[in-house]
Amino acid sequence: MRWSLEQIPLRFRAAAAGVCLYLLWPVAHAPQWQWQALWQSEAETATALAPLLSFYTKYGEQALPALQAQLELNKLRDMELALIADNAEFSAQSRDDSWAEATEFMIAHVAQTVGANELRIYDSECRNNLCRIELAAPTGLNPEFRALVLKYAATLKAGDLEFHDLQEGKDRIMLELKSDKRLQYGYFAERALKPAEREQWLAEVKAWLGTQQNNKK
Image (cartoon, rainbow, N blue to C red; front, side):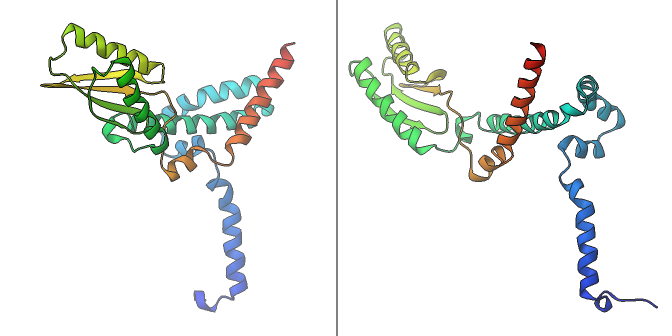
């Protein structure tokens, strides 16, 4: 006798679904290195796991929580490095409004004070951690004007802006400056970089390091 899905009582179907979820739960929450092992070759898996096995062999079971926490933190760092690479160009960056507006004000103020009104700004725009300043250069980059621009850039450096690039045009130059401020990403990227478990991972690694320092005393 064959049963169709509609003929199976609802409580049995619910129980079967619960059992499946229970069995799949550990798989869904497995660490990244376990998932990678599914599609990596045996040689690639052995190379990737060698440092982990060495660490485990040296410290044993007590090291596993800290090891897993550090692997997750490494994954977040790799994700941020990828985002930094994606935002390396001015054209790829979005605008961090509060920082950009304050920095553009500083750029204009410094041009008036340092350059004694000899520097004329056609336009300035800041985005995430890069600023572009378009300066009038009617005489080109002659030694006097170059010295003035370098003085301007050096003063902006005190305001957290490092020289990044300079492009010379017909009667103007484009000065690009970079800040070391942390990049601001979109809502979903920020959430991915700061999961709720991040503080717990940091605490586990810190506790492990504290234990090892105490053991050395």
